[in-house]
Amino acid sequence: MLTEFDQNTIANMTAALEVVCRTIPADQDSHELRKQVGDAMIEAAKNGTRTFVDLQTVGLEVEQAERDRAESQMQLTSAIVAARARLQSRSDRYR
Image 1 (spheres, rainbow, N blue to C red):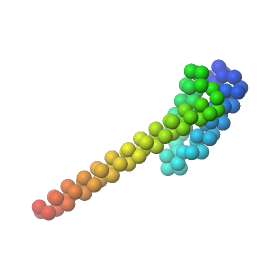
Image 2: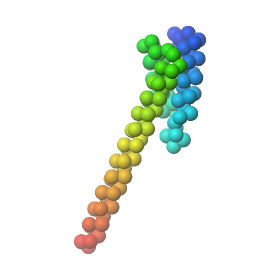
Image 3: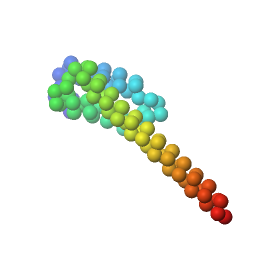
């Protein structure tokens, strides 16, 4: 798969992946996220994005999108918990 890239591009992808993976918070770090970042970099390189900075930017965008998704999920979970607590409180008043 990576044989279609020259050594410089592979070095840039490797270095960019390492830098991006160091920015992933421990509680969100996973093999799946690292794979998403790497896959996005490979796809970008196939489309001509081959500098370290550009590949790093691609990886950081994927990582930020995951952070945003996780934050939205936490907010949704908090809203559900709060709604359930309100409903339970109302239910308890009528018993």
